[in-house]
Length: 195
Image (cartoon, rainbow, N blue to C red):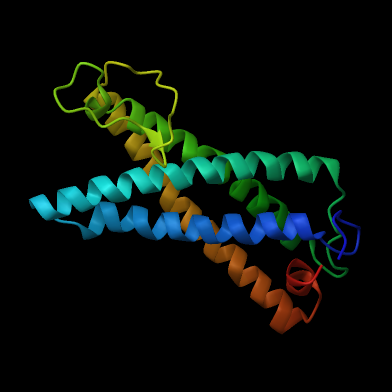
């Protein structure tokens, strides 16, 4: 098993980044949509939302960190060539889809962090403060120590819109991989599984 990528396949580190980050993003999307759409306003739901939010923020931080490492690794390694026979539009969609995924892997955690740090619940002078911590180990930096409902709602809207966009791009990514495997019968999916 090769560590580095080649023009024919992905190395094991790139594949590990792909699958670990991908599964974490799916989990974060499911939990994020559940927190917004699936929970009520009763006290039990509010407590569960608080717990899920802290976990969601922590895993979002991990995705951000892994995505940065993945980007560095991608710049240091060649990417396997796309299969022969792909048309211009398909190539453009492949590159655009990957760019959108990378943008989301960086943008979603940043907008989530900005939403959380600008929340009045994070106000340093609040009677009950909900700090932004990563797995309870350390605080995230706080550019909005006073909190602002309006600013938090703005970042929340952007974060939510990016979540829906990411879900759509992710579905397209999966559909494209399955098309390559079952219709085109090329190596795109296999080389992300086996290298």
